[in-house]
Length: 363
Image (cartoon, rainbow, N blue to C red; front, side):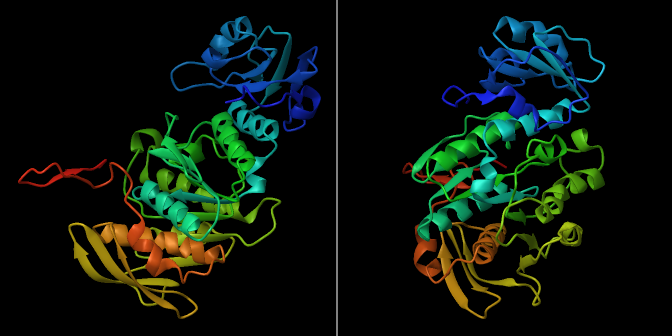
């Protein structure tokens, strides 16, 4: 991801850190940030991140053999390299260095992060498609695909939310491609492991929460707290313009996310009358859903979509609430909604003339 990115002065790059110690001779420039020794290229700075099964410091010799000009290690870890930077937390340092290396690209975008147990991919997809229908140039990063405007490709990443160097490189590529908005899935792992540290969001969207990934987080409460970090971060940063949260009020955990948010909240739902974006189901069929949506300004729209299921109505309401918060005129919704196709592999029908129904679904 760094091959076509110009080098950054090493001294300037290290300003992003609070190093405990710096030893050796600093090279004039660093040409990339790496945490996987197998991906190190000549001129890279290698960050030795402690892992769950093995310590990245074990791979310092391999990184140096591949051309790394220096290493970042946790304080107290012995390392021999042309120059060594000691930090308290290498994983946080990886995120800080990546953001600095790529020029803080999130600050040049209206950035939406979507988190929750279910519906993240579809909600990101809908926000991206609706922004495009509204005439915006948008980048989208999901578990299934990445896209900048009409250039859509299967995701090259191994995680829902990639590690910080890959994420920052993707954001920088979106900026260079002229995107004004970006929408990304934000997993609980990404929040707990600082992958989105130094990524400044303008909006955070909460879909729903059920017990998941407890092997990693330990408890449901820790899982929920990791998700809430996305909302807590909305109150900080350097960007101007409004920031806001979008919360599913029908989920029993919604108050945790509302409480974590230090900026205004747009809530949505089907079961309550006191929400900002209120939906009312009109029809649910095997190949579509029809519903009415009411906005805070009193406008109402009847929408017909190609997304079956009540759960997909929730995804639509989350996306509509996000666009409302971004300040877009939503009168285009009734015309645009029927043309938006579902995410491939998410409740996708296979029609080959067979006398029975076949549906492919990720779940």
